[in-house]
Image (cartoon, rainbow, N blue to C red; front, side):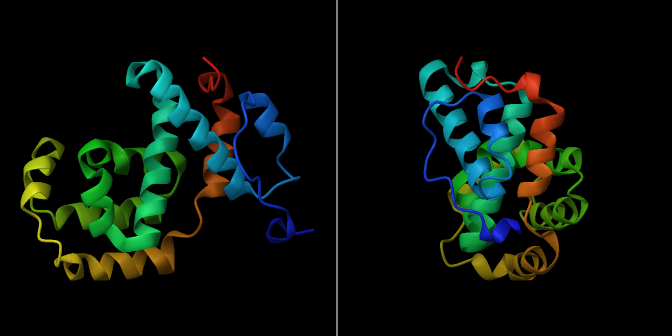
Amino acid sequence: MGTQNLPFLARYSGQTTGELLALEGQFRTDSLILAFEAALHQKFERSGAHSLSDEEKVLLAVEALEREVNNGGYHQFFLNTGCIFVPRIVADLERLGADKAARITCEAIALLNVEDGSEVDAYLRALDETEPERFSACDSAYQAEAGDLSALLMSFIRKTESRFNLTA
């Protein structure tokens, strides 16, 4: 049975990291990753950003990239989450082994024409809502080359399982 035939896990309902990992093979990988993301957002709301491990932040950054670029391109990613994730996203993608996504994302960041991540906020305040075509080549490349990062994220979670504490 291929993963496309597996059911979608509807929502996160308080499972531990081990309990979610045990569901692999019973539910689609992308839905399990969404459950991890939901758990981490709940953890953030309960305890703040300082409570998140670096590995948990990797998952949040990569999932934000996936969601935003797949729905509205890099322009949407930069507008909605860029200030938070631009300084780290390329390194996070490389850490996963998502080399194509890292390369394309690096090219998109270069189009921002900023010196470093700290300047992204100022750029985004001035970014025109009608400017998404600036990133269209990167958007197309991401769609064609990056692939679904869910399997890489699941492998990353398995390798760093002790660094994921969803219920803390």
